[in-house]
Image (tube, rainbow, N blue to C red; front, side):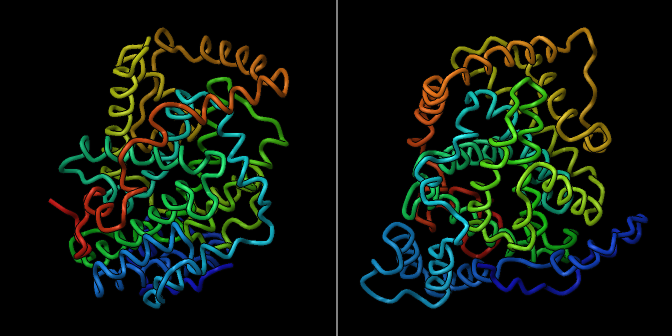
Length: 404
């Protein structure tokens, strides 16, 4: 099911592209309306939450956990429409797949899932200047990016867990909550247009870029450290994440034909022709994200690499997963050969991966260990709190402006 994504008025982003000589292809030209398209269902819910307050928030929270049919009284119109949309499971989705969870992502050791997939996804998001400015304010990049890393990591873990995306499950609730936080950010960006934020951040194309971060970019990063998946696993990965895209409110035309990395690369190339080059805000966000991830990993129990070594490792991974040109534009510098741990790490991971997937029993054990990793379901985070509390935790007020 695809919502009608009504574009906002033409944005400065389109003008920016023409000014820097980025001539869109015919396909990009056809997709141009999505440059300023938001998510009408979620955007309407945000307006309704501001209008009706606690009553609408309680109806939404209960509806996400119990289902629309389980509510004692009819919720406000926009809340009902959103619940109907997320509860309408596309016919192509296999219910058994949702019970199993994202078995491909669960086969990745939690350390590497965090360093490669989470970091890669956020770095890919930062390539959009408009979104980088909104997600990671330049006046306080480190505290903000640390929170983003935590929120994104916990959300992803909830989304891939067995049964996590079943109606009312923690990943289902967290994903719809993420969708609404995107809508809240859009509301803030529209009110801030005259203050220098170009275009419509966290719109349809930016959302597609984030989605690619957890499929194409994240798994390219894993390949860089020696964790490769088969063609069959690749297909299962995109089947699962197509349902995540549905819950996130991504326009179906952007992902319905993406069934593997090859299709994802075509979408990635399309987005690249329609996005202005990374700017200082993008580079500041990327640098803060690399530093925050390295610091968190270095201070985690059992860490064996220093913060400096981890920063070098993350830079190596991002340069290979994003591509050298894109990494240079993001200010992700190369690492001297003498400190490059990638060859050794890749060899060790390939050997570990071989034995991990040697038999169905060993593969199941690895997925079970990843799904039961401490902290993935118990940490308090905005994604699983009632929406009113979640928005405060995420750093935005109900008025639609960033909290101080």
